[in-house]
Image (cartoon, rainbow, N blue to C red; front, side):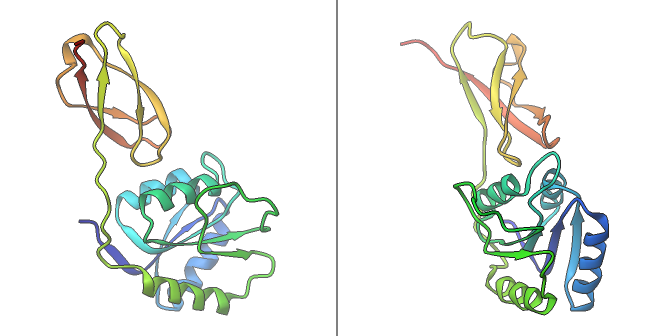
Length: 191
């Protein structure tokens, strides 16, 4: 079972000065902070433990804030997510959404802090998270490559397997987020 660190906030933004400023102000208000430079780095930080809340930018390299929020919502639905962006987009992609939106230019830190405290109180300390196990079924002679979905970033990638390794549990490194993805090939038999 995964444990949430109470009063811990993950700050995900590609602007290091903004991360430092928010980190200092949040720590002065009694929060523990962790910083990530983009969505991929944010996922790496989540491997080390769950925060009670995440504050994320939208426009970032490697993994946009929209994709990061979507992954977090699907993997960790109990963790509060606040988007802090240069502007709130008029059109938002369909899919999982953050709990609250704030604009950076008109940010009222007292309101952000109160929202953060309210959302963090609602985050369970011991969330019930589904464990993901990857097993790939292949047809005889289907080749040495197959597609895996990374359980961390939820992106797909192609992996290679040698014929003699088809019943052995293996690990592939996700090229997107560098997560170690365990898998086992199960050769499907024809009826």
